[in-house]
Length: 613
Ligand SMILES: Cc1ncc(C[n+]2csc(CCOP(=O)(O)OP(=O)(O)O)c2C)c(N)n1
Image 1 (cartoon, protein in one colour):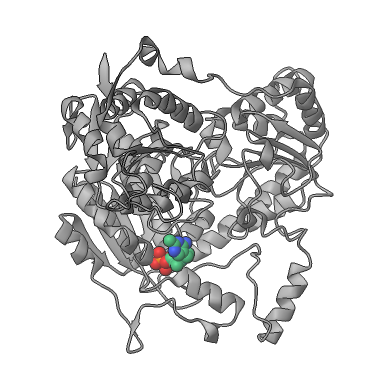
Image 2 (image 1 turned 90 degrees about the vertical axis):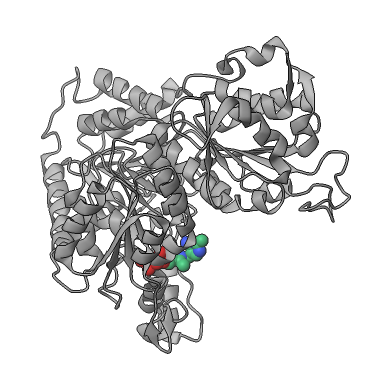
């Protein structure tokens, strides 16, 4: 059967079970988009193998695919034209790379016979058709098939690369002529996709499992830290079995929040610079720490300042991760295990059930009675602090109260999407999350603009669940145009926009570290007074249900109306913007360098920095 490059792409996507292709066409992808005519419905809904979703900006296409994958576990394909269309995906690809999320990005480029002449939208002054170089540090792998004959194999490799090992985004750059040329496609192209990649998890070394099991079993103050790898591997049941067997608390990273129910008595909540006193005190005083599917990034470690979140050593570290490069990178290990989080945790549970003190599958609830009591005390201390913040009747409403109202309104399995700013940090600190894949956040790249499109991806993946984008006004305005996408396809995500008229997380950081009088450049002011667009009116203009509120008791009724609307909805909440009520206190530490001319603050900073390891 003879197929064009465009047809080969479309047939591969259908065979791989990709439900949506998301993007913006241009002259650089006409051959590819034409192949969609026969095999998709333009637009979406019902029938057809492949659905095409139009977005309004290519960055949003990748964020939408990112949000979709985190809920559905199925990657989407994104396609863009040549040049600026391709470049617009960069922030999306980088966000996926840092958080290890697979997405297939198909970009158009110059015809192979024109490359280097400087065709419209080509980057060619140093190398012909050189736009792929931009993706080099941010994609797991990049390809440019220079003939259609190479395309089937490259697509097989692209799927294998993004879906195996530590997952991540891949980019296939398609010259315009390659999309339109055709080739006889052999029988190999019709084999099952799994014929071209390994299946099954990476298993741990049994000797190392025994070593880790002995350490954990003999520990007086064991702690488990769960990262995004636990969620990526679907390892939450094994995590819970292990925690309950060991009677060890579980503390999570940004990407790991949700891996363990936070109303479980063994939840130590969230750790790090924007973590909780409970999480940080437990991890800092652990004698044996099991870190699973996490990389000890600076925010989750309080920038490695000894004793704030971690004290490794003397804490003895067992690190289990799929990527060997993460083991020993930031802290020395006593046992380093390369394995899939689920397989690794399952092996530890099995070893402990056969050899551990709990023995014969029994769980001894009061195995470390005093430790268990201490965990409950630390949990209660933190919850009391949160309750105090949450009970504020201040008008305009504080973000803390808004979060409390939202959490109380939402169902247990509601998906909450956050990106950057005060609402994200406070959601991590103040909202209990109960189920995996209900806390979606741009973790390591902390990308503003992520929430609006990622929440659409989440809602497409789970139409029956509540999906909320909890977002600051600065963040919202970076991708607000995607409300058009939401309305066009009627994807009824609900956005709760905390409007504090500025990039207030940054203003608050300046105030906290340099001094209140040194906050500069992060508030939206006109002639010294706050100035904001009417975001509810903006949303209504897109066709959303929208309203603006500002008092605590208005939150719940507004949420009820937004969810009842059955269309995309925006609740704009005018929140308290004055420091310190604008946010909530950092409980850990973060290395924020201080200029030497701020003598006092600099001296304190140097003292604290000297404690980093
Ligand atoms: C794309 C991008 N640009 C800049 C930043 C730096 N940054 C982090 S938080 C923040 C402010 C966020 O403002 P907003 O979304 O309004 O939330 P707020 O902190 O005001 O609650 C900025 C500018 C970022 N994370 N991402």
